[in-house]
Length: 429
Image (cartoon, rainbow, N blue to C red):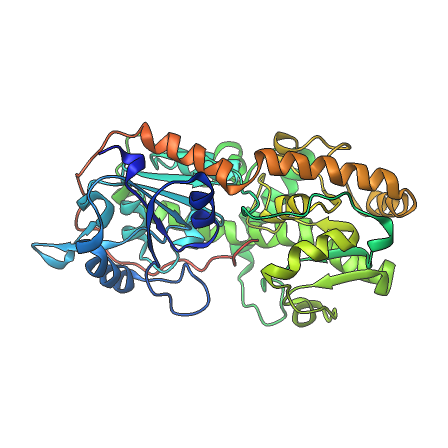
């Protein structure tokens, strides 16, 4: 059977919408049970229970698509629960996971050996939205890593040109405050901050430098990673690296997002509309509740200027909001970001700022030039609806999966050694 005739989608959401738009037949699975609202918070026991449950219904071969690794599940071998095998390998399927957060965040409830031995599966494609993170994983020896940006969900979008008379909000940002690293009760030793502070200092002069560049190449804070080093021998090295990177993630939250929210609230007052969670708790900034999925599109169309600030989980990549705003037909003004020009023509399909003073200048300009703002929003919508929907990304995933040789070889015994999962930054949208 042709793989594309045997398609499974885990977790529903935008991938199910994309598959429906493509007209492909598929089977749908919910995914393993998580402890709370975080869909990634499924531990080994939950993934094993789910694997046992769906194995009789999981057709052999084919392509399985998920968001954030929810399709990664286990079944036990002859040795019982200490002899775990990957369900997709047992079924001879190619698993394709699109990670909208870093891999170590999505797999944070798995012990490091279970996570990193599983990542060694050569029939598992790891599609990562942040190019720097994709390169980092490749240099740690993870196979099957590809770079696939985020996108806008498929759906029916209003493509009528914006009208100035419809504006209900002058300047808006929709997004949460996602780090507690700088809260007064956060007990962090100063030595743990060194690598992240060092990376921040280097990036001031070399903006293109990634955390991996600084940590491994420039300063050698850990030994080089041999290309042929067995994954089981590098658990501690990788765990130390990501523990050190936590402060870097937090500092990027402050650099890319939080500083501008604090600044605009003080400079613009109520002219600046803020919706999301965590701002009052972190900084005493009042905000409206998060918008529902149904409210997003109308809000973006009725805001004169939609700001977007990428969170700390991305060093180079764009978050979903770039594509949601433009798909809805809203005008996008965002902080300049490394991968932005891969997806949009700056000044024609969106615009950017670099620092607080330029942000205020651009806000003043576009509030006074409605027609130019509307023209850019129209061009941005055309670009996103023609190139940046999840149905477009689905083609990339299926093409990559079709090139993968089938394998039924499982690494087995992925829980031979256990260790505590690392604490990780929150989800990014």
